[in-house]
Length: 150
Ligand SMILES: CC(C)(COP(=O)(O)OP(=O)(O)OC[C@H]1O[C@@H](n2cnc3c(N)ncnc32)[C@H](O)[C@@H]1OP(=O)(O)O)[C@@H](O)C(=O)NCCC(=O)NCCS
Image (cartoon, rainbow, N blue to C red):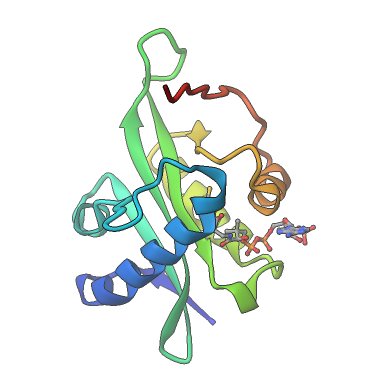
C-alpha cells in the first residue's frame, strides 16, 4: 500500500472516487443533485501550496483519498487559520483497517509542520462509520447545521 500526494494525472480516477463519495453520502441528504454533483475543486487541491491531497494506492489503483486545506478562521476565534479536512474516502472492501486514520495522521502532520494546529471537518450526523473514525482520530462534535426545505 502506497501513501502519496495526488498528481494531476490522477484526476480521472479521483473524479470517479468523488462520485463514489457523493453516492455514499446521498442517503444522508435528499438535496444532493441527481447528476453533476461536484464536491471538490480537485485541480486546486492538487496544485495549491495551501492544500495537500493524499491518495492511497494498491497495485496501481487509488483506493482511498483525503485532503487538508489551510483556511482562514472566523475572526472571533483564537486561531487565525485552521486545517479543513475533506474527501475522506476509502473504497468499500478496504474499510475498517485504519487506512483513513493513517491519511488523517499524515494530513495532521503536514498541517502542524505549517504551524496550523486546529482541525475541522463536516460529517453527516447519521454517517455512523465516519463519526466513529473521526472520533477515534480525536475529533469531537461541535456545530450542528440545521436546514428547512419549504
Ligand atoms: C469514513 C471512512 C472514510 C472511514 O475510513 P476507514 O479507513 O474505514 O476508517 P478507519 O479504519 O481508519 O477508522 C478508524 C477507526 O474507526 C473505526 N471504524 C471505522 N468504521 C467503522 C465501522 N463501520 N464500524 C466500527 N468501527 C469503525 C475503525 O475500526 C478504527 O478504529 P480502530 O483504530 O480502533 O481500529 C470510510 O468508512 C468511507 O469511505 N465511508 C464512505 C465515504 C464517507 O462517508 N466519507 C466520510 C465523509 S465525511
